[in-house]
Length: 84
Image 1 (cartoon, rainbow, N blue to C red):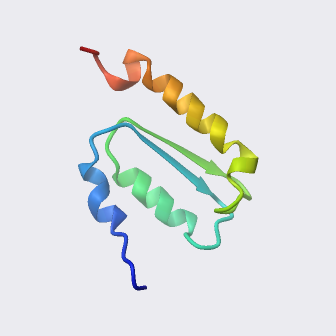
Image 2 (cartoon, one colour; image 1 turned 60 degrees about the vertical axis):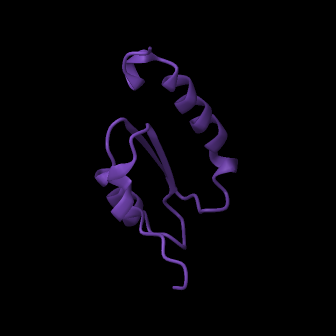
C-alpha cells in the first residue's frame, strides 16, 4: 500500500466527540478494523455498524440521518460536558 493511514496509532489523541460509521458489507476495510478503532477511541464516541452495506452505499441506508442525529446530540450538554 502506497498511502498509509495509521488511524489506530492516532485515534486516542482525538479529543472531540467521535462518530464512527462502518458498513458491514464493506469489501475494502473489514469491520474488524472499525471495531478495533472504535474500542481504541476516547469518550464520547458513537458507532453505527450497518448490516449488509458497503462503503459506497451508506447514504442509501441512513447515513445522513445518523449524522444529523449525532450532531443534534452534540448540542445537548450531557454528551459534550458543561458549556461555557
